[in-house]
Image (cartoon, rainbow, N blue to C red; front, side, top):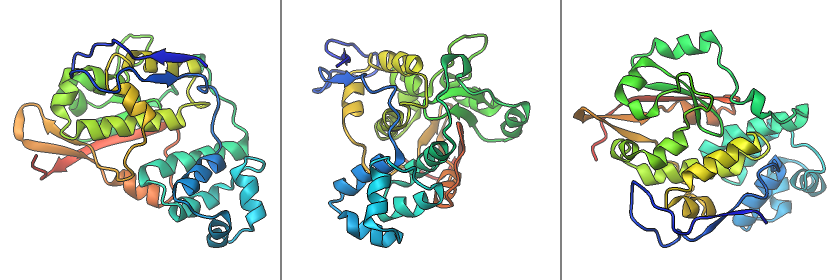
Length: 282
């Protein structure tokens, strides 16, 4: 088993973590988990019987068994209901729907040469005209594809790369840039959720070489191994950011994401992160 040891790493952000000697398993980075297997693990976590879930989905237990064991592709139109039945966190549902569509279409994995997926000029223009911070990210790796002018001015630690062969990665910046910890009010909760998303959904989607780069870089933070090896709380908090120059101004991630997930929409490999003004006080 290929692993990456975390023992002895030093972080510029925080002190030693009791789990800093944990290891990260890199042996399954090329293996894309099936939608059915992912939802089966969710069912087992809830201690629900296969027959009960099948009844709520209006399929036979035999059919559900085929989906859960990846012997049959999971119908994308079934995923929103299945996610609701086993109470999958809202923020994970669009990714599972997109994965189900890929299973049906037999989409080949991308390569390093085609990653990250390029943006169109229309997509760039679409967020450049916004008067709030907005980014396009390559999901689920959190590579920054484009940041609009407001985002670059307000959060310079999360700018898109200029003339670099390797994209700036939002997960790396969250863990390794002191300014991120100072800006994000609920930093640990959001960082853990991002690590969990990256661990669950990157294999088989993001090139192995890119996953390895991000893991090795993030491992400089002593809390990364614990975040990688533990489940995140099912309750999804919105990101809350402090304005760096105005202590009375806060931003929070847009409700667009919750609405899109509830409607069964997926954003493909281009994820829109948009912050809107908030009255939150920390």
